[in-house]
Length: 313
Image (cartoon, rainbow, N blue to C red):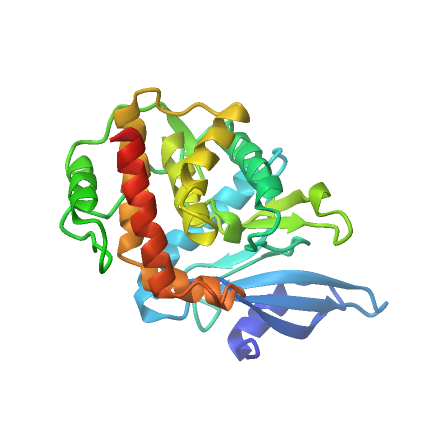
Protein backbone atom coordinates (compact mmCIF):
# COMPACT_ATOMS: atom_id res chain seq x y z
CA UNK A 1 0.00 0.00 0.00
CA UNK A 2 1.40 3.40 -0.94
CA UNK A 3 1.48 6.42 1.34
CA UNK A 4 -1.67 8.51 1.01
CA UNK A 5 -1.37 11.79 -0.98
CA UNK A 6 -1.72 14.33 1.88
CA UNK A 7 0.58 12.32 4.11
CA UNK A 8 3.15 12.00 1.31
CA UNK A 9 3.09 15.76 0.78
CA UNK A 10 3.60 16.26 4.53
CA UNK A 11 6.55 13.87 4.54
CA UNK A 12 8.14 15.74 1.61
CA UNK A 13 7.91 19.01 3.53
CA UNK A 14 10.20 17.51 6.16
CA UNK A 15 12.86 16.24 3.76
CA UNK A 16 16.03 18.02 2.73
CA UNK A 17 16.10 19.90 -0.56
CA UNK A 18 16.36 17.50 -3.47
CA UNK A 19 15.12 14.49 -1.50
CA UNK A 20 11.97 12.53 -2.27
CA UNK A 21 10.27 9.26 -1.30
CA UNK A 22 11.28 6.64 -3.86
CA UNK A 23 9.95 3.48 -2.21
CA UNK A 24 7.59 2.41 0.56
CA UNK A 25 7.47 -0.92 2.40
CA UNK A 26 4.98 -2.17 4.97
CA UNK A 27 6.50 -3.15 8.30
CA UNK A 28 4.74 -5.99 10.06
CA UNK A 29 4.12 -6.60 13.75
CA UNK A 30 2.31 -3.45 14.87
CA UNK A 31 -1.05 -4.09 16.52
CA UNK A 32 -2.35 -0.52 16.68
CA UNK A 33 -0.92 1.44 13.76
CA UNK A 34 0.21 1.12 10.16
CA UNK A 35 3.99 1.14 9.93
CA UNK A 36 5.93 1.87 6.74
CA UNK A 37 9.59 2.18 5.92
CA UNK A 38 10.21 4.98 3.46
CA UNK A 39 13.27 4.98 1.23
CA UNK A 40 14.39 8.56 0.72
CA UNK A 41 16.42 9.29 -2.40
CA UNK A 42 18.58 12.33 -3.12
CA UNK A 43 20.00 13.79 -6.33
CA UNK A 44 23.42 12.28 -5.63
CA UNK A 45 21.82 8.78 -5.56
CA UNK A 46 22.43 8.45 -1.82
CA UNK A 47 19.47 6.94 0.03
CA UNK A 48 18.35 6.83 3.64
CA UNK A 49 15.28 5.48 5.42
CA UNK A 50 12.54 6.92 7.60
CA UNK A 51 9.64 5.21 9.37
CA UNK A 52 6.06 6.47 9.16
CA UNK A 53 3.54 5.48 11.84
CA UNK A 54 -0.12 6.21 11.05
CA UNK A 55 -3.18 5.41 13.12
CA UNK A 56 -6.00 4.46 10.75
CA UNK A 57 -8.25 2.07 12.69
CA UNK A 58 -11.13 4.07 14.25
CA UNK A 59 -10.72 2.11 17.48
CA UNK A 60 -7.18 3.48 17.88
CA UNK A 61 -7.57 6.85 16.18
CA UNK A 62 -9.49 8.15 19.20
CA UNK A 63 -6.30 7.75 21.29
CA UNK A 64 -3.85 8.74 18.56
CA UNK A 65 -3.35 12.36 19.63
CA UNK A 66 -2.33 11.37 23.14
CA UNK A 67 -0.17 8.46 22.02
CA UNK A 68 1.66 10.38 19.31
CA UNK A 69 2.32 13.35 21.57
CA UNK A 70 3.68 11.00 24.20
CA UNK A 71 5.86 9.21 21.67
CA UNK A 72 7.20 12.49 20.27
CA UNK A 73 8.02 13.59 23.82
CA UNK A 74 9.73 10.30 24.63
CA UNK A 75 11.87 10.35 21.48
CA UNK A 76 12.92 13.90 22.26
CA UNK A 77 13.79 12.90 25.83
CA UNK A 78 15.78 9.84 24.73
CA UNK A 79 17.98 11.73 22.27
CA UNK A 80 21.49 11.78 23.65
CA UNK A 81 20.88 9.13 26.32
CA UNK A 82 22.34 5.66 26.41
CA UNK A 83 19.03 4.22 25.19
CA UNK A 84 19.09 3.80 21.42
CA UNK A 85 15.80 4.98 19.95
CA UNK A 86 14.68 6.64 16.70
CA UNK A 87 15.06 10.39 16.26
CA UNK A 88 11.85 12.37 15.87
CA UNK A 89 11.45 14.02 12.45
CA UNK A 90 7.88 15.32 12.60
CA UNK A 91 4.51 14.58 14.19
CA UNK A 92 0.93 15.35 13.15
CA UNK A 93 -1.12 14.06 16.11
CA UNK A 94 -4.45 15.58 15.04
CA UNK A 95 -4.19 14.79 11.28
CA UNK A 96 -4.09 18.51 10.50
CA UNK A 97 -1.86 17.77 7.50
CA UNK A 98 -2.21 14.02 6.92
CA UNK A 99 -5.14 11.76 6.19
CA UNK A 100 -4.60 10.13 9.59
CA UNK A 101 -2.65 10.99 12.77
CA UNK A 102 0.99 10.25 11.96
CA UNK A 103 4.55 10.39 13.21
CA UNK A 104 7.74 10.42 11.14
CA UNK A 105 11.02 9.20 12.63
CA UNK A 106 14.42 7.93 11.62
CA UNK A 107 14.86 4.27 10.77
CA UNK A 108 17.06 2.04 12.91
CA UNK A 109 18.90 -0.84 11.31
CA UNK A 110 18.28 -4.24 12.80
CA UNK A 111 15.23 -6.42 13.21
CA UNK A 112 13.01 -7.85 15.89
CA UNK A 113 13.81 -11.50 16.56
CA UNK A 114 11.02 -13.74 17.81
CA UNK A 115 12.55 -17.14 17.05
CA UNK A 116 13.11 -19.70 19.76
CA UNK A 117 16.70 -20.21 18.64
CA UNK A 118 19.06 -17.89 20.45
CA UNK A 119 16.68 -16.75 23.18
CA UNK A 120 19.30 -17.71 25.79
CA UNK A 121 21.61 -15.11 24.26
CA UNK A 122 18.98 -12.42 23.72
CA UNK A 123 17.24 -12.56 27.13
CA UNK A 124 20.23 -11.16 29.08
CA UNK A 125 20.58 -8.40 26.46
CA UNK A 126 16.91 -7.53 26.86
CA UNK A 127 17.34 -7.43 30.62
CA UNK A 128 20.34 -5.09 30.47
CA UNK A 129 18.52 -2.80 28.05
CA UNK A 130 15.49 -2.62 30.33
CA UNK A 131 17.69 -1.79 33.32
CA UNK A 132 19.16 1.09 31.27
CA UNK A 133 15.67 2.40 30.47
CA UNK A 134 14.65 2.25 34.12
CA UNK A 135 17.79 4.17 35.13
CA UNK A 136 16.68 7.29 33.21
CA UNK A 137 15.66 10.21 35.37
CA UNK A 138 13.81 12.70 33.15
CA UNK A 139 13.46 16.27 34.33
CA UNK A 140 9.75 15.98 33.63
CA UNK A 141 8.15 12.67 34.54
CA UNK A 142 5.72 11.03 32.12
CA UNK A 143 2.22 10.34 33.34
CA UNK A 144 1.61 7.73 36.01
CA UNK A 145 1.11 4.22 34.67
CA UNK A 146 -2.39 2.99 33.94
CA UNK A 147 -3.78 -0.53 33.95
CA UNK A 148 -7.21 -1.29 32.60
CA UNK A 149 -7.65 -4.97 33.45
CA UNK A 150 -10.04 -5.72 36.28
CA UNK A 151 -11.06 -8.93 38.00
CA UNK A 152 -14.25 -8.83 35.93
CA UNK A 153 -12.53 -8.35 32.55
CA UNK A 154 -10.19 -11.34 32.80
CA UNK A 155 -10.92 -14.09 30.28
CA UNK A 156 -10.05 -17.54 31.60
CA UNK A 157 -8.71 -19.73 28.73
CA UNK A 158 -10.86 -22.63 27.69
CA UNK A 159 -9.70 -25.62 29.69
CA UNK A 160 -7.62 -23.44 32.04
CA UNK A 161 -6.90 -24.39 35.65
CA UNK A 162 -9.98 -22.89 37.31
CA UNK A 163 -8.49 -22.86 40.81
CA UNK A 164 -5.25 -21.21 39.73
CA UNK A 165 -7.07 -18.56 37.71
CA UNK A 166 -9.50 -17.83 40.54
CA UNK A 167 -6.56 -17.34 42.90
CA UNK A 168 -4.78 -15.14 40.36
CA UNK A 169 -7.88 -12.99 39.88
CA UNK A 170 -8.10 -12.58 43.66
CA UNK A 171 -4.54 -11.22 43.60
CA UNK A 172 -5.46 -8.27 41.39
CA UNK A 173 -8.55 -7.45 43.45
CA UNK A 174 -6.13 -6.02 46.01
CA UNK A 175 -4.74 -2.47 45.83
CA UNK A 176 -1.41 -1.99 44.06
CA UNK A 177 1.50 -2.54 46.45
CA UNK A 178 3.86 0.37 47.22
CA UNK A 179 6.68 0.91 44.74
CA UNK A 180 9.57 3.19 43.84
CA UNK A 181 8.80 4.98 40.59
CA UNK A 182 10.87 4.44 37.46
CA UNK A 183 10.74 5.60 33.85
CA UNK A 184 8.86 2.83 32.00
CA UNK A 185 8.55 1.88 28.34
CA UNK A 186 5.25 0.05 29.02
CA UNK A 187 5.48 -2.24 26.00
CA UNK A 188 9.01 -3.55 26.32
CA UNK A 189 9.08 -6.94 24.62
CA UNK A 190 11.02 -8.68 21.83
CA UNK A 191 8.80 -7.26 19.09
CA UNK A 192 9.83 -3.72 20.05
CA UNK A 193 13.56 -4.38 20.31
CA UNK A 194 15.79 -4.40 17.22
CA UNK A 195 18.76 -6.75 17.08
CA UNK A 196 21.80 -7.18 14.90
CA UNK A 197 22.45 -10.92 14.77
CA UNK A 198 25.46 -11.96 12.63
CA UNK A 199 24.33 -15.12 10.78
CA UNK A 200 27.65 -16.85 11.31
CA UNK A 201 27.90 -15.83 14.97
CA UNK A 202 24.44 -15.58 16.57
CA UNK A 203 26.11 -15.52 19.99
CA UNK A 204 27.37 -12.04 19.09
CA UNK A 205 23.86 -10.62 18.88
CA UNK A 206 23.49 -7.03 20.06
CA UNK A 207 20.63 -4.60 20.50
CA UNK A 208 20.62 -1.67 18.08
CA UNK A 209 17.44 0.08 19.19
CA UNK A 210 14.14 0.11 21.06
CA UNK A 211 10.98 1.29 19.29
CA UNK A 212 7.28 2.04 19.98
CA UNK A 213 7.49 4.72 22.67
CA UNK A 214 3.79 5.62 22.60
CA UNK A 215 3.12 4.70 26.24
CA UNK A 216 6.04 5.98 28.37
CA UNK A 217 4.95 6.04 31.99
CA UNK A 218 6.12 6.44 35.56
CA UNK A 219 5.66 3.41 37.74
CA UNK A 220 7.20 0.22 39.16
CA UNK A 221 10.02 -1.50 37.30
CA UNK A 222 8.16 -4.72 38.07
CA UNK A 223 5.43 -3.75 35.62
CA UNK A 224 7.77 -3.40 32.61
CA UNK A 225 9.56 -6.59 33.60
CA UNK A 226 6.26 -8.43 33.99
CA UNK A 227 5.19 -7.46 30.46
CA UNK A 228 8.38 -8.83 28.96
CA UNK A 229 7.99 -11.95 31.11
CA UNK A 230 4.52 -12.57 29.68
CA UNK A 231 5.75 -12.10 26.11
CA UNK A 232 8.69 -14.46 26.55
CA UNK A 233 6.43 -17.03 28.23
CA UNK A 234 4.06 -17.00 25.26
CA UNK A 235 6.71 -16.68 22.55
CA UNK A 236 9.05 -19.38 23.78
CA UNK A 237 8.04 -21.32 26.87
CA UNK A 238 6.17 -20.49 30.10
CA UNK A 239 9.37 -21.05 32.08
CA UNK A 240 10.87 -17.95 30.46
CA UNK A 241 8.56 -15.72 32.47
CA UNK A 242 10.31 -16.14 35.81
CA UNK A 243 13.66 -16.69 34.10
CA UNK A 244 13.53 -13.20 32.61
CA UNK A 245 12.83 -11.66 36.01
CA UNK A 246 16.00 -13.41 37.23
CA UNK A 247 17.96 -12.04 34.25
CA UNK A 248 16.76 -8.54 35.06
CA UNK A 249 18.10 -8.83 38.61
CA UNK A 250 21.39 -10.29 37.36
CA UNK A 251 21.70 -7.20 35.16
CA UNK A 252 21.45 -4.96 38.20
CA UNK A 253 17.74 -4.23 38.20
CA UNK A 254 15.73 -4.08 41.42
CA UNK A 255 12.34 -5.78 41.77
CA UNK A 256 9.92 -6.10 44.67
CA UNK A 257 11.52 -8.16 47.41
CA UNK A 258 8.26 -9.38 48.95
CA UNK A 259 6.92 -12.41 47.05
CA UNK A 260 3.29 -11.25 47.21
CA UNK A 261 4.22 -7.86 45.73
CA UNK A 262 6.25 -9.41 42.94
CA UNK A 263 3.38 -11.80 42.24
CA UNK A 264 0.93 -8.90 41.98
CA UNK A 265 2.71 -7.27 39.03
CA UNK A 266 3.48 -10.53 37.24
CA UNK A 267 -0.11 -11.71 37.54
CA UNK A 268 -1.57 -8.33 36.60
CA UNK A 269 0.27 -8.33 33.27
CA UNK A 270 -0.43 -11.99 32.54
CA UNK A 271 -4.14 -11.51 33.19
CA UNK A 272 -4.25 -8.42 30.98
CA UNK A 273 -3.02 -10.62 28.13
CA UNK A 274 -5.98 -12.96 28.67
CA UNK A 275 -8.29 -10.38 27.08
CA UNK A 276 -6.19 -10.10 23.90
CA UNK A 277 -4.73 -13.54 23.23
CA UNK A 278 -6.23 -13.57 19.74
CA UNK A 279 -4.63 -10.22 18.89
CA UNK A 280 -1.28 -11.37 20.24
CA UNK A 281 -1.52 -14.47 18.05
CA UNK A 282 -2.25 -12.35 14.98
CA UNK A 283 0.74 -10.09 15.69
CA UNK A 284 3.09 -13.01 16.26
CA UNK A 285 1.91 -14.79 13.13
CA UNK A 286 2.28 -11.63 11.02
CA UNK A 287 5.87 -11.46 12.29
CA UNK A 288 6.54 -15.02 11.12
CA UNK A 289 5.63 -17.17 14.13
CA UNK A 290 2.83 -19.02 12.33
CA UNK A 291 3.03 -21.79 14.92
CA UNK A 292 1.66 -19.49 17.61
CA UNK A 293 -2.06 -19.93 17.17
CA UNK A 294 -4.60 -18.61 19.64
CA UNK A 295 -5.03 -22.06 21.18
CA UNK A 296 -1.27 -22.48 21.60
CA UNK A 297 -1.00 -19.12 23.34
CA UNK A 298 -3.98 -19.90 25.56
CA UNK A 299 -2.29 -23.12 26.66
CA UNK A 300 1.00 -21.36 27.39
CA UNK A 301 -0.75 -18.55 29.25
CA UNK A 302 -2.60 -21.07 31.42
CA UNK A 303 0.66 -22.89 32.21
CA UNK A 304 2.39 -19.58 32.97
CA UNK A 305 -0.33 -18.28 35.29
CA UNK A 306 -0.52 -21.64 37.06
CA UNK A 307 3.28 -21.62 37.45
CA UNK A 308 3.25 -18.11 38.91
CA UNK A 309 0.68 -19.11 41.52
CA UNK A 310 2.66 -22.26 42.40
CA UNK A 311 5.95 -20.38 42.68
CA UNK A 312 4.86 -17.17 44.39
CA UNK A 313 1.25 -17.59 45.49
